Amino acid sequence: MNFLEERIVKDGVVKPGNVLKVDSFLNHQMDVKLFDKMGEEFAKRFEKKKINKILTIEASGIGIASVVALHFDVPVVFAKKTQSINLDGDMYTASVESFTHKNINNVIVSKKFLTKDDHVLIIDDFLANGCALMGLIQIVNAAHATVEGIGIAIEKGFQSGGHIIRNLGYQLESLAIIDSMDDVTGEIKFKDPNETM
Ligand code: 5GP
Image (cartoon, rainbow, N blue to C red; front, side, top):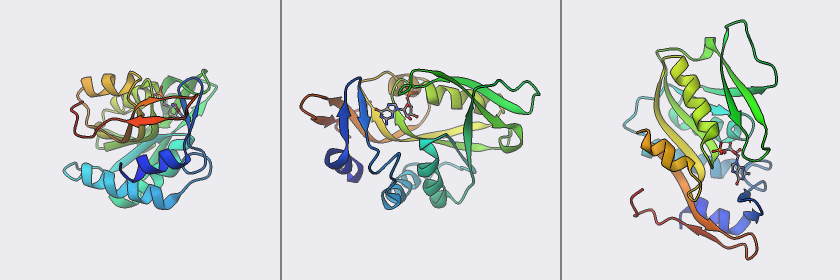
């Protein structure tokens, strides 16, 4: 098990509805030393890519993306969630269905902060069905920028997002891929990193 898998086993809590709670170290209370290790690992996995910007989505992607950005020495832009659709043309927008809240959010990024010259690494905390990532990819494409890669902390490998995103040809790197989890026993099994995806 790698450092993140070990932490998930120690402090993660499996909830009904395929939800893993990691709020003691990842998305409520935040262990920034753990984020720093994640940044080190992403820097290795994307070392061949020329990345000049990190893009994430509020709220829980922001903490991780900020620490990861130190390893790439680049700014972080986060897609903001909003109820109103902006019509003045200054924003790129996408609609994203929330896996945890089951509602639909419009997410926006100012055109000032994403342009055709940007080579973007997308970072997020979880990958489930891929809605958040598809929204972010849509925004990068609308800006005629380039998605150089996608870094995820925890991928739930039994949900469809990872498959969809890899089939689209993106370099998707997830630091922990959960194969199965059981909300009755609390058992979490990870995908063997040597298995091909
Ligand atoms: P997707 O859009 O891939 O279906 O879901 C990804 C988003 O939903 C992430 O940004 C994350 O905030 C949230 N999410 C999905 N699954 C989980 C989970 O098991 N636990 C937590 N805490 N958040 C999740």
